[in-house]
Image (cartoon, rainbow, N blue to C red; front, side, top):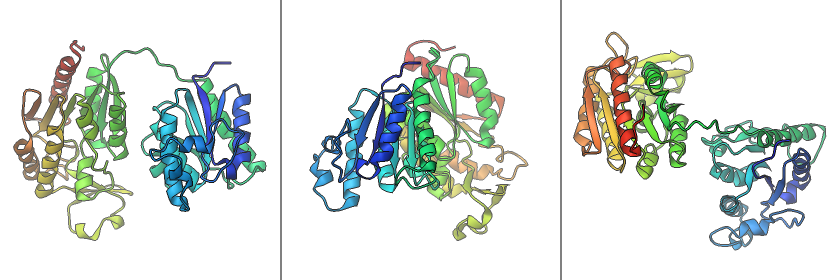
Length: 410
């Protein structure tokens, strides 16, 4: 039996789900994994646990009273969530976490899971798992399991489902995916279908010297990449596809939120980027498109995805927004402008080809972008998917990575 790195934290409200929590704790322990049972009940008095609710609550900045001195359950749940997140962050032996909960328990436990490093096993058995789990999982590696029956006692269904969750966590902890020992610096690269040729050429050219990690720029992809930047798990970013900004400012469905680029600014990680797919805003099926956009130029990507061409005025706003963000980064920045078009659809003969609108974007960026020794903007007479453009990206990536690391990457 393989040794585990740390203990399995079994977390839940022992006042209402104690039987089920003790059941999964026993199974995990019998599988050979050490267990720490953590009570997060806001009205709990369980004593046969390793971390009592009072102990967890004391980690709240305002003390345990923030959890227990209020009659408002919502306030108590929010306070316990903050306390658990801080409690888990202060522990050095968390090798994995399994939580059981309904809406309250899920709200308490998942923020603590998101605070754990990516790669640490996280399993959340939740009655909310059959719905929209985005607010709970966000862009982290949390495995959500739907319990089928409510978590309200053990029965022939719940024993199997909860047992599977327990054994899943134990398996993850007993058979960890060990680091390959590859010392190549990791680079985050953003891609859309319409910028795939560019990214494929870049990864082919850099793969021998860098660990290239590609993220789909659908909103969650940009946020996931920046979460890795914030965690120090990426040494540089090749932001070929910044289309999420168009969805944010124009109202599409693939926005990464107003925090896009903020991890770049906070960390100063080397950034080489472009304007991939800023010619489009993403919507679902045509009938879902807001009425205010009726009459605009659309392209049906498939039955469920409809693309809208951005206008010159929208692109001016997008360009100014991107420049303002990049100007605040203390690290090296290279913004490469593909004058021949920013996506597969933005090329001669293609439905979104609009040089006038593109020029508005390029000019707005040049006006707002603050150039310096470390911040450069470069116009190139190529389409974003041309081999010459990808080669230019590679040259700039090597340059900024060499400058940052003080060593040559080949």
